[in-house]
Image (cartoon, rainbow, N blue to C red; front, side, top):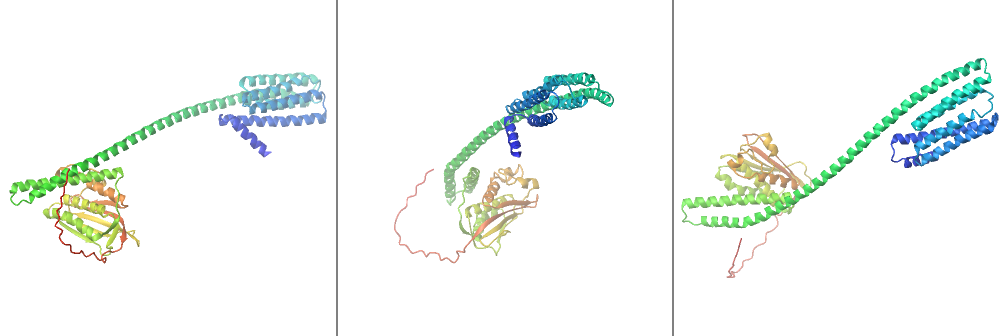
Amino acid sequence: MFKSVISLTNRIDEVYAEASIFYRLKVRMLVFFSAVLAVIVLLNVVKVLWVAPPAVEFRLLTNGFILASCALAYKWVLRGWLDRAGDGLVLGSVIPVHAVLFVVPEFTESVAAGLQLYSFDLIFLLIAIVFATPRIAGLAFLIILAGFIAFNQVVVFSGGVEGSLEFAARALRREGIVALLVMFAIGTALVRLLREAHRRSMQVLAEVKTSKDQLEELVAERTSDLAAATQRADEASRAKSDFLANMSHEIRTPLNGIIAASELILRHPDLPPKAIEHTRLVTESGELLLKLIGDILDFSKIEAGELSFEIHQFRLRALVADTVALIETRAASLNIEIEQTVAPELAQCYAADSFRLRQIILNLLSNAVKFTPPNGRITIHVEPATGADDTAARLRFSVRDTGIGMDEETAQRIFQRFTQADSSTTRRFGGTGLGLAISARLVEMMGGKIGVESQLGSGSDFHFTLPLEVAPDQAATAAPIPLPLAPLGLHVLLAEDN
């Protein structure tokens, strides 16, 4: 039985899948009331057959009409004709019941028959108000009211009812008419309110659905535009990176020639001091421009995702010392002292891209020299950080200076590209602000973190941590002994172009 009910419910949901929840609930209620009415009619048929009152054939015919209307309503419901099913059920029940009352020649208990009619009228009126269309519901109410009044007037009172039964009959007629009128008025008002609320809710849902569709269309359009804009931006970024890479290579060749020629000129012992100064300026400007081109090329590679790392073994202390030596001459010209310390507990050899590590340290040292006044001091310190294990270690590199420092706001954006301490820094100290941005990107790509602690006027402390794999010490490896070669008496021709 439960499977049949579930199957019927699923079929109703399938037929009325596009309808609202309120509408589907109304369908289920109509099926339920039809089933209840059919059960009541069947019980009444059993009663008629058992009691055998007068005019049995008319009574059975009336019950047959009601059962047929229930079956027809069920059939129409499953076809999706809810209004037709409600109207058919109401008319197929109300008309036969009130018609047979005037066909049956007599009633054994006329007051009891009137009370039974009143009970059926309440059920029929409720079904008419809820499930029938407004016009059919009004027609059914008129039939019910007229039939009830006529039955009480013709059958009950014409039969000579006396005593308490007469009082009960008159009360039933009077109170029954009032109850039917009040029930129809209130029920009709409530159904209209429900239908109006349902109409408004469906209207709101339709508006929401329309707005949702428009919003989804707008989002899809904006997403498409964003994807197209992103693609154009990526293409422009790749074109820019390709242009910078090509131009950097094209500029480097003649620039190296200028620097080499300037250095050769400086080797002439008979140059006047003024020419030496001019040539030195040319050399320094060329080297500065060459570094700038290298920074731009590195940054374009990083942005394009084309920068790769070459992992190899290197000696940590030698790398730090060699990097300091690269900047020491420039620092000495400004009377700036550079101190380097490497914690003794650190291993001798590590495996990483030593070229990029040297580039990071050199950028930080160059930045410290640039912003440290004469007679200042710079300290580079390497020590172990947390997170070490047997095969890998996290090292902390710090470069501290006694330079101009910076405020907290500047420190938060110092690792952005083309960013320096203030707007006048570029004019006062030179540079483009790419060095720290490149260092920050390299540290992140190597799996580390970079930061800065600074106070305006009191210097800065740039530090970063990197996970480096410990490599076996190769100090004990014997270097190959070069064999003496006899002079070959050959000449070598070296030809270069730009």
